Image 1 (cartoon, helix red, strand yellow):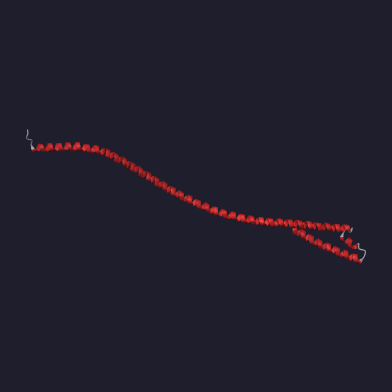
Image 2 (cartoon, helix red, strand yellow):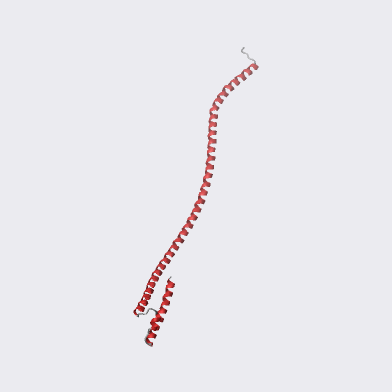
Length: 176
C-alpha cells in the first residue's frame, strides 16, 4: 500500500489541487464580495454625483438666461428713465417759461387796469365838464354861444372832446 500507482498519485494530486483551489477560490470570492459591494456603492454615488452635476449645469444655464433677460429689462428701464428725466427737464423749463409769461401777463393786466381807471377818470371828467357848463349835448353847447369867439372856442372844445373820445374807445377796444 505504500506504493501508490502514478495514475492514482496524479489523480490524488489533481483532487488535492482542486480542493485547494476550491477552498482558496471561496476565500477570494468572500474577499471580493466586500470589494464589489464597495465598488457598487461608489459607482452609485458617482452616478448620483453626475446626476447632481447635470442638474446644477441645467440650473446654471437657466439662471444665466434669466440673468440675461433681467439685464435686458434693466437696460430698457434705464432707457425709459433717461427719457423720463429728459421729459421732466423739458417740462421744468417749459414751466419756467410759462411762469415768466404769466408774470408778464399779470403786469400787463395791472397796466391795463390802471389805463382803464385813467380812461374812466377822463370820461367822468368830460361829463363833469359838460355838466358844469350846463349843456346836455355837444351840439347844444356849440349853438348856445353868444358870440363868434365863444362859438369857435366851443367848437374847438367839442372837436377836442370827440377826438379824445375816439382815442378812448380805441384804447378800450385794445384793452379788451
